Length: 595
Image: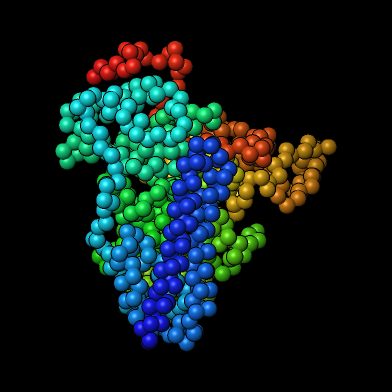
C-alpha cells in the first residue's frame, strides 16, 4: 500500500479520536457547573450524551474515510498493517494511547464488518501494557497529621473550593472526624498517616465525590467524601466512605459512569485500583466513562483466562428465558447472553427492540439496580470449550447467530454481564436453610430495587424474581431488559369493582384492558405464589401493590423532580443538626475529638 495513503487513513482516525476526546472532556468539565447549579435534569442528559459521543465519532470517521480514500484501498485488509504502524507512531506521544488503540479497533471493525480480525492489523493486545504516563504535578494532594486531624480535614475541604459556600464548614469537619473514629478507629490512633486525595472531583447524578486514600506504611484504606448540594446555595458533606465494600459499591457495575476530568486515564485507574483492588481495570475504565476501552480490557483478560483455564461454557443456572439464551464459564464471574431467533408467545417483540432496550439501559441512570453490559459482534471461541448441551441449545434457539465451523464457534452477537445468583434461587436457598434474617433482608432489597428503578423512571415490566440477581454485597439487581419501559409511559389502574358476583368468577376480566394498562393489585399473586413470602413482602413494601403509589412517582417525574438514589447506606449519612446543635468550638478552631 502507498505509505502516504496509510498515513492519511491513520491521521483521519486520530483526528476523529481527538475530536471525540475534546467533546468528551467538554461534557465532563460541565459537570461542575451542573452540580453547583443543581441542574439535575440537564446532568442526566449530559451523561447520556457523553455515551452517545463514541458511536457518533465512529460514524463521522467512517464518513471521512469514505470521502478521502478510495474503497479499493480502504477495504483491502492487506494494506492495514501499514495503517496500524502509522497510527501507532502517531499515538505514541499521547497521554491516553490505550484509548486511542481502542478507537482504532472500533473503526477497523466497522471497515471489515463480519470478517475475521488480523492481529497484525489492529490492537488485539495493547502496545502500551506496562507503559506508565504520569502527570508532571501529580494527580493527588497529600495531607499529613502533623498539625492534627481537624486541620487536616479542614485544609482538605478548603482545597476543594466549589465556588459555593459550605452549609456549615465546622459541623462537616467534626462529622467527618467522628465518622472516621467510628468506622476506622485504629487509623485515627496512628501517627504516621497521610491522606491522598485525587485532584479531580468525581461527579455523578446529584453528588460530587472526593476520592482519596489513607496511607500508613504499606497499608492503604479508602477515604471518600460524598458532597451534596442543598439547592439553596450551600454544599455539605453527606457521608464518609472508608470501607472497601462501600467504595466497591460506589464504583459498581450497576452504577452510571462518573464524570471526572481524568486527563491521564491509566494513572487514574491505577490510583483507584489501589483503593479497591478487587475491581479489575476493565470495570474501573468503564466507571470513569471509557466503557469501550473497558470492553477492550475485558476482552484481553478474557482471552488470557481462556488460555489459563480448561473448564467448559455451560448453560447458566436459573429459569430459562423466553428471549435470551444465557451461558457462563464456571471459572469466570460473567454470563453471556444471546438473543434467540424466535420468541414464544406472549412475547411480542423483535431482536431490534431487544437491542434498543439494552442500549436504553446503557445510556440511562442505572441507580445501582441494573447491570451494565458489553456488546460483542462476531466473537470466535474454541468449540471444545462448549458443553454439548449448551452447543445444542444455542444452535436450536439461535442458529442465525451461533455458527459452528471446524473447531470454532462464531457468535455473531452477544452481551456480557456480571454473573449473579438469580433471586429465585437465592430465596429458595435461604428458605431451605431456614434463614429468616437473610430472607427478610433480600425481600426488602427486592422491594427497594423496584422502587429505585421507578424513581429513575424505569418500569421493569416482568418483575418475577427470576429476572433479578443478588450480588456478592447482597444487593438485588435487575438484569432482564426485554420488557422495560419508561414508567411515565405506563397507565397504572385500580381493578374496577365487579357489578355482580358472576363477573368476578368469569375466566375473562369484566373490565377493559388497553395496551400499557398495569394493575398493581395483581402483583402479589403473580410475583409470590408462596403465601408466606407474599405476606412478608407486603409488610415491607405493600405500597407497590397499589396504583396510587406508582402514580405518585409518575407525578414527581412529570414535575421534573429528580429523586435521590445515593450509592451508600443511610446509616453512613452524617448528621445535619442546626448550628445550635453543633459541637462546641473554641475560637475559630473545633476542638480535637477525644480518641
